[in-house]
Length: 546
Image (tube, rainbow, N blue to C red; front, side, top):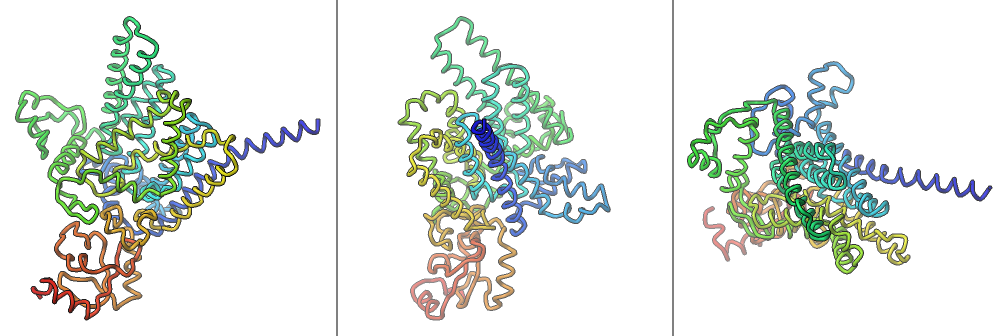
Protein backbone atom coordinates (compact mmCIF):
# COMPACT_ATOMS: atom_id res chain seq x y z
CA UNK A 1 0.00 0.00 0.00
CA UNK A 2 2.85 2.33 0.89
CA UNK A 3 4.47 1.77 -2.51
CA UNK A 4 1.18 2.43 -4.31
CA UNK A 5 0.66 5.63 -2.31
CA UNK A 6 4.23 6.78 -3.11
CA UNK A 7 3.70 6.04 -6.80
CA UNK A 8 0.41 7.96 -6.73
CA UNK A 9 2.11 11.00 -5.19
CA UNK A 10 4.83 10.84 -7.85
CA UNK A 11 2.23 10.69 -10.64
CA UNK A 12 0.34 13.61 -9.12
CA UNK A 13 3.52 15.66 -8.84
CA UNK A 14 4.47 14.76 -12.41
CA UNK A 15 1.06 15.95 -13.67
CA UNK A 16 1.39 19.22 -11.77
CA UNK A 17 4.86 19.83 -13.22
CA UNK A 18 3.62 19.07 -16.73
CA UNK A 19 0.82 21.62 -16.31
CA UNK A 20 2.94 24.31 -14.69
CA UNK A 21 6.01 24.09 -16.95
CA UNK A 22 4.42 25.62 -20.09
CA UNK A 23 2.68 28.23 -17.92
CA UNK A 24 6.02 29.19 -16.35
CA UNK A 25 7.63 29.50 -19.79
CA UNK A 26 4.81 31.71 -21.08
CA UNK A 27 4.93 33.88 -17.94
CA UNK A 28 8.68 34.32 -18.45
CA UNK A 29 8.01 35.36 -22.06
CA UNK A 30 5.42 37.87 -20.87
CA UNK A 31 7.64 39.40 -18.18
CA UNK A 32 10.68 39.52 -20.46
CA UNK A 33 8.63 41.25 -23.16
CA UNK A 34 7.10 43.79 -20.78
CA UNK A 35 10.44 44.71 -19.21
CA UNK A 36 12.02 45.03 -22.67
CA UNK A 37 9.08 47.04 -24.02
CA UNK A 38 9.44 49.48 -21.15
CA UNK A 39 13.05 50.24 -22.08
CA UNK A 40 12.90 50.73 -25.84
CA UNK A 41 11.85 53.94 -27.56
CA UNK A 42 8.74 54.44 -29.63
CA UNK A 43 9.23 53.00 -33.11
CA UNK A 44 8.48 55.01 -36.22
CA UNK A 45 4.89 53.98 -36.94
CA UNK A 46 3.52 52.96 -33.54
CA UNK A 47 1.78 56.32 -33.10
CA UNK A 48 -0.03 55.89 -36.43
CA UNK A 49 -1.30 52.41 -35.53
CA UNK A 50 -2.30 53.53 -32.04
CA UNK A 51 -4.09 56.66 -33.27
CA UNK A 52 -6.06 54.68 -35.84
CA UNK A 53 -7.12 52.16 -33.20
CA UNK A 54 -8.13 54.94 -30.84
CA UNK A 55 -10.11 56.70 -33.57
CA UNK A 56 -11.97 53.45 -34.28
CA UNK A 57 -12.97 53.17 -30.64
CA UNK A 58 -14.13 56.78 -30.79
CA UNK A 59 -16.24 56.02 -33.87
CA UNK A 60 -14.01 57.29 -36.69
CA UNK A 61 -12.89 54.68 -39.28
CA UNK A 62 -11.16 57.01 -41.77
CA UNK A 63 -7.89 55.49 -42.95
CA UNK A 64 -4.76 57.72 -42.59
CA UNK A 65 -2.22 55.25 -44.00
CA UNK A 66 -2.14 52.02 -45.98
CA UNK A 67 -0.80 49.70 -43.26
CA UNK A 68 -3.09 50.47 -40.33
CA UNK A 69 -5.68 47.80 -39.48
CA UNK A 70 -8.66 47.53 -37.11
CA UNK A 71 -6.82 45.12 -34.80
CA UNK A 72 -5.01 48.19 -33.45
CA UNK A 73 -8.18 49.03 -31.53
CA UNK A 74 -7.08 46.24 -29.18
CA UNK A 75 -3.86 48.17 -28.46
CA UNK A 76 -5.79 51.41 -28.03
CA UNK A 77 -8.26 49.91 -25.56
CA UNK A 78 -6.31 50.87 -22.39
CA UNK A 79 -5.99 54.50 -23.52
CA UNK A 80 -9.65 54.60 -24.52
CA UNK A 81 -10.63 53.25 -21.09
CA UNK A 82 -8.57 56.00 -19.46
CA UNK A 83 -10.51 58.57 -21.52
CA UNK A 84 -14.00 57.32 -20.73
CA UNK A 85 -13.34 56.55 -17.04
CA UNK A 86 -11.47 59.57 -15.67
CA UNK A 87 -10.30 59.42 -12.11
CA UNK A 88 -9.51 55.72 -11.78
CA UNK A 89 -6.26 54.88 -10.03
CA UNK A 90 -4.42 53.30 -12.97
CA UNK A 91 -5.38 55.94 -15.54
CA UNK A 92 -1.84 57.28 -15.79
CA UNK A 93 -0.57 53.83 -16.79
CA UNK A 94 -3.48 53.08 -19.14
CA UNK A 95 -2.67 56.16 -21.20
CA UNK A 96 0.96 55.15 -21.76
CA UNK A 97 2.56 53.51 -24.77
CA UNK A 98 3.65 50.63 -22.53
CA UNK A 99 0.01 49.81 -21.74
CA UNK A 100 -0.72 49.68 -25.46
CA UNK A 101 2.30 47.46 -26.01
CA UNK A 102 1.16 45.10 -23.23
CA UNK A 103 -1.92 44.32 -25.32
CA UNK A 104 0.30 43.00 -28.12
CA UNK A 105 2.28 41.01 -25.56
CA UNK A 106 -0.90 39.42 -24.20
CA UNK A 107 -1.88 38.41 -27.74
CA UNK A 108 1.58 36.88 -28.24
CA UNK A 109 1.16 34.95 -24.97
CA UNK A 110 -2.02 33.48 -26.44
CA UNK A 111 -0.02 32.51 -29.51
CA UNK A 112 2.55 30.82 -27.29
CA UNK A 113 -0.15 28.70 -25.67
CA UNK A 114 -1.62 27.81 -29.06
CA UNK A 115 1.81 26.73 -30.31
CA UNK A 116 2.20 24.47 -27.29
CA UNK A 117 -1.31 23.04 -27.72
CA UNK A 118 -0.95 22.58 -31.50
CA UNK A 119 2.48 20.94 -31.22
CA UNK A 120 1.27 18.65 -28.42
CA UNK A 121 -1.69 17.53 -30.55
CA UNK A 122 0.71 16.57 -33.34
CA UNK A 123 3.82 15.30 -31.58
CA UNK A 124 3.28 15.03 -27.82
CA UNK A 125 4.18 16.87 -24.61
CA UNK A 126 7.98 17.04 -24.81
CA UNK A 127 8.05 18.21 -28.46
CA UNK A 128 5.42 20.81 -27.53
CA UNK A 129 7.69 22.17 -24.80
CA UNK A 130 10.57 22.47 -27.24
CA UNK A 131 8.30 24.20 -29.80
CA UNK A 132 7.21 26.62 -27.09
CA UNK A 133 10.81 27.35 -26.07
CA UNK A 134 11.79 28.05 -29.69
CA UNK A 135 8.95 30.56 -29.95
CA UNK A 136 9.55 32.20 -26.57
CA UNK A 137 13.28 32.69 -27.23
CA UNK A 138 12.98 33.77 -30.85
CA UNK A 139 14.35 37.34 -30.85
CA UNK A 140 12.30 38.28 -33.91
CA UNK A 141 9.10 37.16 -32.20
CA UNK A 142 10.15 38.94 -29.00
CA UNK A 143 10.90 42.14 -30.91
CA UNK A 144 7.54 42.39 -32.63
CA UNK A 145 5.45 41.00 -29.79
CA UNK A 146 6.05 44.19 -27.83
CA UNK A 147 5.16 46.79 -30.45
CA UNK A 148 1.93 48.52 -31.44
CA UNK A 149 2.07 47.21 -35.00
CA UNK A 150 0.23 44.51 -36.94
CA UNK A 151 2.99 42.01 -37.77
CA UNK A 152 2.55 39.70 -34.79
CA UNK A 153 -1.26 39.77 -35.20
CA UNK A 154 -1.00 38.52 -38.78
CA UNK A 155 1.45 35.86 -37.61
CA UNK A 156 -0.98 34.71 -34.95
CA UNK A 157 -3.89 34.81 -37.40
CA UNK A 158 -2.16 32.39 -39.79
CA UNK A 159 -1.24 30.09 -36.91
CA UNK A 160 -4.87 30.10 -35.79
CA UNK A 161 -6.18 29.50 -39.32
CA UNK A 162 -3.90 26.47 -39.82
CA UNK A 163 -4.89 25.06 -36.42
CA UNK A 164 -8.61 25.53 -37.12
CA UNK A 165 -8.22 23.90 -40.53
CA UNK A 166 -6.65 20.79 -38.96
CA UNK A 167 -9.47 20.68 -36.42
CA UNK A 168 -12.07 21.02 -39.15
CA UNK A 169 -10.51 18.18 -41.15
CA UNK A 170 -10.73 15.87 -38.15
CA UNK A 171 -14.40 16.68 -37.63
CA UNK A 172 -16.23 18.35 -40.53
CA UNK A 173 -19.31 19.46 -38.66
CA UNK A 174 -21.03 22.82 -38.94
CA UNK A 175 -19.57 24.06 -35.67
CA UNK A 176 -15.98 23.63 -36.85
CA UNK A 177 -16.89 25.01 -40.27
CA UNK A 178 -18.27 28.20 -38.73
CA UNK A 179 -15.29 28.52 -36.37
CA UNK A 180 -12.84 28.12 -39.27
CA UNK A 181 -14.71 30.70 -41.35
CA UNK A 182 -14.77 33.08 -38.38
CA UNK A 183 -11.02 32.63 -37.87
CA UNK A 184 -10.41 33.52 -41.52
CA UNK A 185 -12.67 36.54 -41.14
CA UNK A 186 -10.77 37.65 -38.05
CA UNK A 187 -7.47 37.36 -39.95
CA UNK A 188 -8.60 40.09 -42.36
CA UNK A 189 -8.54 42.76 -39.67
CA UNK A 190 -4.87 42.05 -38.83
CA UNK A 191 -2.97 42.69 -42.06
CA UNK A 192 -3.57 42.58 -45.82
CA UNK A 193 -1.34 39.51 -46.06
CA UNK A 194 -4.31 37.67 -44.53
CA UNK A 195 -6.32 38.13 -47.73
CA UNK A 196 -4.35 35.16 -49.05
CA UNK A 197 -5.38 32.94 -46.14
CA UNK A 198 -8.83 32.00 -47.49
CA UNK A 199 -7.67 30.70 -50.91
CA UNK A 200 -4.63 29.10 -49.29
CA UNK A 201 -6.72 27.20 -46.73
CA UNK A 202 -9.14 26.02 -49.44
CA UNK A 203 -6.29 24.85 -51.67
CA UNK A 204 -4.71 23.00 -48.74
CA UNK A 205 -8.04 21.34 -47.96
CA UNK A 206 -8.46 20.31 -51.61
CA UNK A 207 -4.94 18.83 -51.78
CA UNK A 208 -5.52 16.92 -48.57
CA UNK A 209 -8.81 15.50 -49.83
CA UNK A 210 -7.34 14.64 -53.22
CA UNK A 211 -4.54 12.70 -51.50
CA UNK A 212 -7.12 10.85 -49.40
CA UNK A 213 -9.25 9.98 -52.44
CA UNK A 214 -6.20 8.74 -54.34
CA UNK A 215 -5.15 6.61 -51.38
CA UNK A 216 -8.59 5.15 -50.65
CA UNK A 217 -9.66 4.76 -54.26
CA UNK A 218 -12.20 6.65 -56.35
CA UNK A 219 -15.75 6.76 -55.02
CA UNK A 220 -18.71 7.65 -57.19
CA UNK A 221 -19.90 11.18 -56.47
CA UNK A 222 -17.02 11.92 -54.09
CA UNK A 223 -15.61 14.77 -56.16
CA UNK A 224 -19.00 16.46 -56.50
CA UNK A 225 -19.54 16.18 -52.76
CA UNK A 226 -16.15 17.75 -52.08
CA UNK A 227 -16.83 20.58 -54.49
CA UNK A 228 -20.09 21.33 -52.69
CA UNK A 229 -18.23 21.34 -49.38
CA UNK A 230 -15.61 23.77 -50.68
CA UNK A 231 -18.26 26.06 -52.11
CA UNK A 232 -20.18 26.14 -48.84
CA UNK A 233 -16.98 26.81 -46.89
CA UNK A 234 -15.96 29.57 -49.32
CA UNK A 235 -19.37 31.25 -49.09
CA UNK A 236 -19.34 30.95 -45.31
CA UNK A 237 -15.83 32.41 -45.10
CA UNK A 238 -16.91 35.28 -47.40
CA UNK A 239 -19.98 35.92 -45.25
CA UNK A 240 -17.99 35.90 -42.00
CA UNK A 241 -15.38 38.16 -43.59
CA UNK A 242 -18.02 40.70 -44.57
CA UNK A 243 -19.54 40.59 -41.07
CA UNK A 244 -16.18 40.90 -39.28
CA UNK A 245 -14.88 43.67 -41.53
CA UNK A 246 -18.07 45.72 -41.26
CA UNK A 247 -18.05 45.35 -37.49
CA UNK A 248 -14.36 46.27 -37.29
CA UNK A 249 -14.69 49.34 -39.53
CA UNK A 250 -18.05 50.36 -38.01
CA UNK A 251 -19.76 49.81 -41.42
CA UNK A 252 -18.03 53.01 -42.55
CA UNK A 253 -19.17 53.78 -46.12
CA UNK A 254 -20.26 50.22 -46.79
CA UNK A 255 -22.12 49.65 -50.10
CA UNK A 256 -20.30 52.48 -51.90
CA UNK A 257 -20.46 51.66 -55.66
CA UNK A 258 -17.18 50.56 -57.22
CA UNK A 259 -17.19 53.58 -59.53
CA UNK A 260 -17.13 55.98 -56.58
CA UNK A 261 -13.81 54.64 -55.27
CA UNK A 262 -10.73 56.80 -55.86
CA UNK A 263 -8.21 54.12 -56.73
CA UNK A 264 -4.45 54.59 -57.07
CA UNK A 265 -3.32 51.14 -58.21
CA UNK A 266 -3.30 50.02 -61.83
CA UNK A 267 -5.25 46.89 -60.84
CA UNK A 268 -8.36 48.58 -59.48
CA UNK A 269 -8.31 51.71 -61.66
CA UNK A 270 -7.93 49.41 -64.68
CA UNK A 271 -10.93 47.39 -63.48
CA UNK A 272 -13.01 50.56 -63.35
CA UNK A 273 -12.03 51.52 -66.90
CA UNK A 274 -12.23 48.10 -68.57
CA UNK A 275 -15.47 46.99 -66.96
CA UNK A 276 -17.64 50.10 -66.53
CA UNK A 277 -20.71 47.93 -65.87
CA UNK A 278 -19.15 46.95 -62.53
CA UNK A 279 -18.95 50.57 -61.43
CA UNK A 280 -22.58 50.60 -60.36
CA UNK A 281 -22.20 47.55 -58.14
CA UNK A 282 -22.25 48.44 -54.43
CA UNK A 283 -19.32 46.88 -52.56
CA UNK A 284 -20.46 45.17 -49.32
CA UNK A 285 -17.21 46.10 -47.60
CA UNK A 286 -16.28 49.25 -45.68
CA UNK A 287 -14.63 51.81 -47.94
CA UNK A 288 -11.41 52.03 -45.85
CA UNK A 289 -10.69 48.32 -46.25
CA UNK A 290 -10.66 48.23 -50.05
CA UNK A 291 -9.04 51.66 -50.09
CA UNK A 292 -6.13 50.40 -47.98
CA UNK A 293 -5.68 47.33 -50.15
CA UNK A 294 -5.56 49.57 -53.21
CA UNK A 295 -2.85 51.70 -51.59
CA UNK A 296 -0.84 48.57 -50.75
CA UNK A 297 -1.00 47.45 -54.39
CA UNK A 298 0.02 50.89 -55.64
CA UNK A 299 3.00 51.13 -53.30
CA UNK A 300 4.02 47.57 -54.11
CA UNK A 301 4.09 48.45 -57.83
CA UNK A 302 5.93 51.76 -57.47
CA UNK A 303 8.01 51.28 -54.33
CA UNK A 304 6.66 54.63 -53.10
CA UNK A 305 6.54 55.13 -49.34
CA UNK A 306 9.23 52.58 -48.49
CA UNK A 307 12.43 54.35 -49.50
CA UNK A 308 15.26 52.43 -51.13
CA UNK A 309 15.69 48.69 -50.65
CA UNK A 310 18.99 47.69 -49.07
CA UNK A 311 20.48 44.20 -49.23
CA UNK A 312 24.07 42.98 -48.72
CA UNK A 313 25.53 46.42 -49.38
CA UNK A 314 23.40 47.11 -52.47
CA UNK A 315 20.75 49.80 -52.86
CA UNK A 316 17.92 49.81 -55.36
CA UNK A 317 14.56 51.50 -55.78
CA UNK A 318 11.20 49.82 -56.34
CA UNK A 319 11.89 46.20 -57.26
CA UNK A 320 13.07 43.92 -54.47
CA UNK A 321 15.99 41.50 -54.27
CA UNK A 322 15.35 37.81 -54.98
CA UNK A 323 16.01 35.69 -51.91
CA UNK A 324 15.96 38.65 -49.51
CA UNK A 325 13.97 36.90 -46.78
CA UNK A 326 15.93 33.67 -47.02
CA UNK A 327 19.16 35.55 -46.30
CA UNK A 328 17.44 37.62 -43.62
CA UNK A 329 16.29 34.40 -41.94
CA UNK A 330 19.80 32.92 -42.06
CA UNK A 331 21.25 36.06 -40.47
CA UNK A 332 18.55 37.01 -37.99
CA UNK A 333 17.20 33.68 -36.76
CA UNK A 334 19.29 32.13 -33.95
CA UNK A 335 21.77 29.51 -35.17
CA UNK A 336 20.51 27.00 -32.60
CA UNK A 337 16.96 27.33 -33.94
CA UNK A 338 18.14 26.90 -37.53
CA UNK A 339 20.16 23.85 -36.49
CA UNK A 340 17.12 22.24 -34.82
CA UNK A 341 14.86 23.01 -37.80
CA UNK A 342 17.42 21.54 -40.20
CA UNK A 343 17.75 18.36 -38.13
CA UNK A 344 13.97 18.07 -37.94
CA UNK A 345 13.77 18.17 -41.74
CA UNK A 346 16.56 15.61 -42.10
CA UNK A 347 14.98 13.20 -39.64
CA UNK A 348 11.60 13.67 -41.31
CA UNK A 349 13.08 12.74 -44.68
CA UNK A 350 14.97 9.66 -43.48
CA UNK A 351 12.31 8.36 -41.09
CA UNK A 352 9.63 6.34 -42.89
CA UNK A 353 7.25 6.43 -39.92
CA UNK A 354 7.33 10.22 -39.79
CA UNK A 355 6.90 10.50 -43.54
CA UNK A 356 3.84 8.24 -43.34
CA UNK A 357 2.13 10.88 -41.17
CA UNK A 358 2.81 13.69 -43.65
CA UNK A 359 -0.80 14.25 -44.71
CA UNK A 360 -2.05 14.26 -41.12
CA UNK A 361 0.68 16.45 -39.65
CA UNK A 362 3.41 18.13 -41.67
CA UNK A 363 1.39 18.97 -44.77
CA UNK A 364 -0.51 21.67 -42.87
CA UNK A 365 2.76 23.18 -41.63
CA UNK A 366 4.76 22.85 -44.84
CA UNK A 367 2.19 24.22 -47.29
CA UNK A 368 2.02 27.76 -45.80
CA UNK A 369 5.78 27.77 -45.19
CA UNK A 370 6.51 26.90 -48.82
CA UNK A 371 3.88 29.28 -50.19
CA UNK A 372 4.99 32.34 -48.22
CA UNK A 373 8.68 31.57 -48.67
CA UNK A 374 8.23 31.61 -52.45
CA UNK A 375 5.91 34.62 -52.40
CA UNK A 376 7.94 36.89 -50.15
CA UNK A 377 11.32 36.00 -51.65
CA UNK A 378 10.43 36.19 -55.33
CA UNK A 379 7.18 38.14 -55.81
CA UNK A 380 7.04 40.69 -52.99
CA UNK A 381 8.85 43.98 -53.45
CA UNK A 382 8.42 45.72 -50.09
CA UNK A 383 11.59 44.40 -48.49
CA UNK A 384 12.00 46.53 -45.40
CA UNK A 385 12.40 43.91 -42.70
CA UNK A 386 12.07 40.27 -41.70
CA UNK A 387 8.83 41.16 -39.89
CA UNK A 388 6.85 40.45 -43.07
CA UNK A 389 8.17 36.89 -43.08
CA UNK A 390 7.27 36.25 -39.44
CA UNK A 391 4.04 34.52 -40.47
CA UNK A 392 5.89 31.23 -41.05
CA UNK A 393 7.95 31.27 -37.85
CA UNK A 394 5.44 29.62 -35.48
CA UNK A 395 4.84 26.85 -38.02
CA UNK A 396 8.59 26.24 -38.19
CA UNK A 397 8.75 26.20 -34.39
CA UNK A 398 5.99 23.59 -34.23
CA UNK A 399 7.63 21.39 -36.84
CA UNK A 400 11.03 21.74 -35.17
CA UNK A 401 9.49 20.25 -32.03
CA UNK A 402 8.95 16.99 -33.93
CA UNK A 403 12.70 16.35 -33.62
CA UNK A 404 12.11 15.49 -29.96
CA UNK A 405 9.19 13.15 -30.53
CA UNK A 406 11.14 10.11 -29.28
CA UNK A 407 12.61 11.91 -26.27
CA UNK A 408 12.34 8.89 -23.96
CA UNK A 409 14.60 6.91 -26.29
CA UNK A 410 17.20 9.68 -26.59
CA UNK A 411 20.62 8.71 -25.30
CA UNK A 412 22.15 10.86 -22.54
CA UNK A 413 24.49 12.38 -25.13
CA UNK A 414 21.55 13.45 -27.33
CA UNK A 415 19.74 14.92 -24.34
CA UNK A 416 22.85 16.86 -23.32
CA UNK A 417 23.29 18.13 -26.89
CA UNK A 418 19.63 19.21 -26.96
CA UNK A 419 20.04 21.00 -23.65
CA UNK A 420 23.22 22.75 -24.76
CA UNK A 421 21.52 23.88 -27.97
CA UNK A 422 18.78 25.56 -25.96
CA UNK A 423 21.27 27.11 -23.55
CA UNK A 424 23.05 28.57 -26.58
CA UNK A 425 19.70 29.82 -27.93
CA UNK A 426 18.78 31.51 -24.65
CA UNK A 427 22.20 33.15 -24.19
CA UNK A 428 22.33 34.35 -27.80
CA UNK A 429 18.85 35.86 -27.62
CA UNK A 430 19.05 37.43 -24.18
CA UNK A 431 22.44 38.95 -24.98
CA UNK A 432 20.53 41.58 -27.00
CA UNK A 433 18.16 42.50 -24.16
CA UNK A 434 16.30 44.84 -24.28
CA UNK A 435 16.92 45.52 -27.99
CA UNK A 436 15.66 42.36 -29.69
CA UNK A 437 14.70 44.01 -32.99
CA UNK A 438 18.31 44.50 -34.24
CA UNK A 439 19.27 40.92 -33.33
CA UNK A 440 21.70 39.19 -35.68
CA UNK A 441 23.07 35.74 -34.95
CA UNK A 442 26.76 34.95 -34.55
CA UNK A 443 27.35 34.79 -38.30
CA UNK A 444 27.63 38.55 -37.86
CA UNK A 445 30.11 38.32 -35.00
CA UNK A 446 30.87 42.06 -34.83
CA UNK A 447 27.51 43.64 -34.08
CA UNK A 448 28.67 46.99 -35.42
CA UNK A 449 28.93 45.41 -38.90
CA UNK A 450 25.34 44.16 -39.21
CA UNK A 451 24.55 47.15 -41.45
CA UNK A 452 26.71 45.60 -44.17
CA UNK A 453 24.08 42.90 -44.63
CA UNK A 454 20.64 44.35 -43.85
CA UNK A 455 19.12 47.58 -42.61
CA UNK A 456 15.71 49.25 -42.30
CA UNK A 457 13.44 47.60 -39.69
CA UNK A 458 15.90 44.72 -39.43
CA UNK A 459 18.15 47.05 -37.46
CA UNK A 460 16.75 50.52 -36.93
CA UNK A 461 13.07 51.28 -36.41
CA UNK A 462 13.64 54.10 -33.96
CA UNK A 463 13.77 51.77 -30.96
CA UNK A 464 17.15 53.11 -29.79
CA UNK A 465 16.44 56.84 -29.78
CA UNK A 466 16.35 57.13 -26.00
CA UNK A 467 19.72 55.37 -25.71
CA UNK A 468 21.06 57.68 -28.44
CA UNK A 469 19.94 60.80 -26.54
CA UNK A 470 21.57 59.52 -23.36
CA UNK A 471 24.80 58.79 -25.22
CA UNK A 472 24.91 62.25 -26.80
CA UNK A 473 24.19 63.90 -23.46
CA UNK A 474 27.14 62.13 -21.85
CA UNK A 475 29.42 62.54 -24.89
CA UNK A 476 29.15 66.21 -25.97
CA UNK A 477 32.16 65.82 -28.27
CA UNK A 478 30.18 63.46 -30.54
CA UNK A 479 28.11 64.99 -33.36
CA UNK A 480 26.22 63.93 -36.47
CA UNK A 481 28.18 63.73 -39.73
CA UNK A 482 27.33 65.81 -42.79
CA UNK A 483 27.66 65.13 -46.49
CA UNK A 484 31.08 66.83 -46.31
CA UNK A 485 34.18 65.03 -45.07
CA UNK A 486 34.97 66.09 -41.52
CA UNK A 487 37.24 64.95 -38.72
CA UNK A 488 36.07 64.03 -35.27
CA UNK A 489 33.79 61.51 -33.59
CA UNK A 490 30.42 61.01 -35.25
CA UNK A 491 27.29 58.97 -34.73
CA UNK A 492 24.86 58.10 -37.49
CA UNK A 493 21.81 55.85 -37.75
CA UNK A 494 22.16 52.67 -39.76
CA UNK A 495 19.44 53.64 -42.22
CA UNK A 496 20.98 57.05 -42.91
CA UNK A 497 24.41 55.52 -43.34
CA UNK A 498 23.40 52.91 -45.93
CA UNK A 499 21.17 55.35 -47.83
CA UNK A 500 17.59 54.19 -47.31
CA UNK A 501 16.53 57.76 -48.11
CA UNK A 502 19.56 59.13 -49.96
CA UNK A 503 22.54 56.87 -50.73
CA UNK A 504 24.80 59.78 -51.70
CA UNK A 505 24.81 61.78 -48.46
CA UNK A 506 27.03 59.47 -46.42
CA UNK A 507 28.74 57.62 -49.25
CA UNK A 508 32.11 59.07 -48.19
CA UNK A 509 31.67 57.65 -44.70
CA UNK A 510 30.12 54.33 -45.67
CA UNK A 511 32.62 53.44 -48.38
CA UNK A 512 35.84 54.47 -46.66
CA UNK A 513 35.52 53.98 -42.91
CA UNK A 514 34.48 51.31 -40.43
CA UNK A 515 32.45 51.96 -37.27
CA UNK A 516 34.32 51.78 -33.97
CA UNK A 517 31.22 51.10 -31.89
CA UNK A 518 27.46 51.39 -31.68
CA UNK A 519 24.62 52.63 -29.50
CA UNK A 520 21.70 50.19 -29.16
CA UNK A 521 23.03 48.41 -32.29
CA UNK A 522 21.18 50.86 -34.57
CA UNK A 523 23.41 53.94 -34.30
CA UNK A 524 27.03 53.58 -35.38
CA UNK A 525 30.02 55.49 -34.04
CA UNK A 526 32.83 56.61 -36.36
CA UNK A 527 36.09 58.36 -35.57
CA UNK A 528 37.85 60.23 -38.38
CA UNK A 529 41.36 61.54 -37.79
CA UNK A 530 42.97 64.43 -39.70
CA UNK A 531 45.36 62.00 -41.38
CA UNK A 532 42.47 59.81 -42.55
CA UNK A 533 40.65 62.83 -43.95
CA UNK A 534 43.75 64.00 -45.78
CA UNK A 535 44.29 60.55 -47.29
CA UNK A 536 40.68 60.39 -48.43
CA UNK A 537 40.79 63.86 -49.97
CA UNK A 538 43.99 63.05 -51.86
CA UNK A 539 42.68 59.81 -53.31
CA UNK A 540 39.03 60.66 -54.06
CA UNK A 541 36.72 63.46 -55.14
CA UNK A 542 34.72 63.53 -51.90
CA UNK A 543 36.34 66.77 -50.75
CA UNK A 544 35.93 68.67 -54.03
CA UNK A 545 32.55 70.17 -53.13
CA UNK A 546 33.66 71.64 -49.82
